[in-house]
Amino acid sequence: RQQQRDGCCICFRVERVAFVPSIVRWCIDRSYVACLQFSSPISPFHNHQSQQQHRMKRPAPATTTASDADAESATWQNSYVSDSSDDGSASQQQHRQCFSNCSIPSCGSMPSNPRRKRPTPSEGERAIIEDLNALSIKEREEVYEDIHGVRGSGVVQETPEMVSRAVIDVWECIGRIKRHRKEAYELALMMCPAFVQDRAFVLMFLRADFFDVAKAATRLVNHFEVKLELFGVDRLVKQITWEDLDEGTRAVVLTKAMQHFPGLVDTVGRTVIIGYTAREDYSNQQNHHRATWYFLMGLMRDNEDAQRRGVVAIGYMIGMSEEKLSESMSTNIARETDALPMRYAALHICYNSPKLRPTLSFMQVVASTQTRLRLRAHFGSDVECLYELMAFGVKQDVFPVDSEGNLSTDRYAEALDTRRRREAEMEEARRQSSKIEYPRSIDVLFGRGKTFKDFHGNVLMHACIDRYKDNYRRASSREEKTTIVEVVVMTIKDSGGRFLRRCKDPMDGWEVVPFVAAREKISYTIRARLK
Image (cartoon, rainbow, N blue to C red; front, top):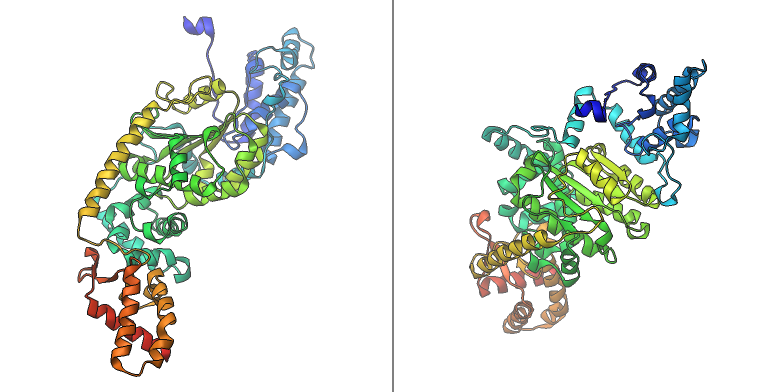
């Protein structure tokens, strides 16, 4: 009875453009043409263009055609409607008038509000088309299932033997990467092998790339490169906690523009994260990137389901000005995404300003193929975008943005407080432990090789020695030389530096060497630099 009263929706899934004429003819014969809409999965921006050309019965301009297939489809739509109306029948004349006179937004002309101007296809969409054309039908199915949250999609069945073999293969693959491309990784491995080679840590990267060992190895190397740039040597081999953030980065986190909290999942239980970009502070990009890293790494480390199934990310850009998101920002975001152990099951961009279109297109171009194929953009008001997100499985009863665009922060604030308390307990336990897990940047390390020589603390030691080596050369007695060496040792210690060497088991960390051993190292280094 409800179908008799309200009608129903008929959806055609078209694998080939050649089938479009038959579908259009079928709709014309059954008087359904007034409600006909074309939505191409190839291009997230092409939907409106096809509909508008279809309504106005004019061919698409050559400069705004996403591909030859899209242009051919638009031409078929217009030609079939026009040709079918030439016999002058009342029914078909009614169809002909519908496209220009219908008051229903889905099949009539769009409102004249300039804010609602829709974008045209771009280089980003062409990149999506090329990626899709390179996929088989089965691979396309997997992409669509990921986006729409088909239960069981995008999950690799793991076994202990497979995981163990994959972890070993990752180390072998990293060993084949050229040294100049993995300097940060080598530094991290020297500082704390237990952190870098932790099985659970490496497994996050394998899951992010569907256990593709080569991609996981590259992502792991990139991880330490980006982390070194953002947080420096002292935090390279530790979990980033609230205490590691400076005041500017903490202020960005406290805007609560990036959110996830327990219960924020889609209809099939996948983790949903939201970035309310209109509220974010982009005045200092470095602070923003650190805050993003802190948020996402904490989420992935504590959420095994998100590691296995990926995350559904929503960039909520409604009300955001184009000045806030520069192309350099987009490039840095894409680089960070390739360095984090995280996989996008779907990425939705909601926006209402056509001026953001060039930046979004740029994001599509610089994104990885896997991310680009799963990106969908939604143009419209808050209500329209929320309804479109519902079609992709995002539940509105837990979504923190309402129909008027207001962001709720209560649940995330509670989750953030819980995380900060847990991190404070972890930091307190680490301080009370006598074990030295990793050296600081001002420590002097005992060891051989370029990684030890280039370590920041050892470089500082060489600079300190250079200030005293002339005095050492002019010293006439052994006692004077010993005094100079002891002065260098005490200068380094007074500045907070320690003289460290590895424990017998490298996984146990580092230990402080006796004063005599430190003095011998300084004496040997001075003599070597005087040669």
